[in-house]
Length: 261
Image (cartoon, rainbow, N blue to C red; front, top):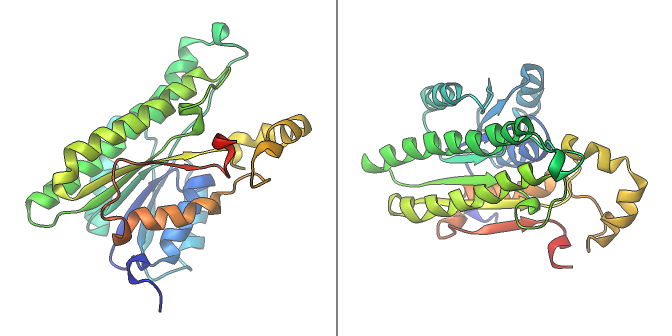
């Protein structure tokens, strides 16, 4: 018999950047576990494709919103619309991200810094704040509980040459998450971070095409391969499920063992 808490029937999960990459891998597992899934993404066509595919996997509803998380009012309005159309938000995964670097740190522009900050940290802040606001209000009305997840990166804890702006955002996100865990635990809200390693997504396409990168870096991954979006499905289901009711304030590294080698 299947371990009951991993059946997400009746739960609603919001995944930003859920139409491709890591976000899609998470949304796919959540939908297959019978959660209703709200996808946010900037590209309407990709949203439509994701909804069509995910709707075939489980018993829950799947809907998508065209959202740029770098726009505060859009995030506020979209959160309210998800609650209005899907009834509630039980899990919010702030996954949407960009990765703009520079030839060197001294050549990094303020524009590059702010482009990373706008999506990866400001956008995550607004996304998490609005979902936590909803969860807190629900808890005060007698319906406590909820799970928020910030998808950061190994770049947030390791040296990321030529990517200091990106790394700064990914180092800040787990700190935000830990603060949420401490402040909002009284409402049954738990908050956790996920730090991906080298994952084969659009963001790493140039590295994937590099024989030098593959020979110098990927061979150092103990699992001996690139990570894939589907590798994040199990963690997403766990954190959305009642199996994680006492898991909060943690930082989960999913990197094939790279960070410890």
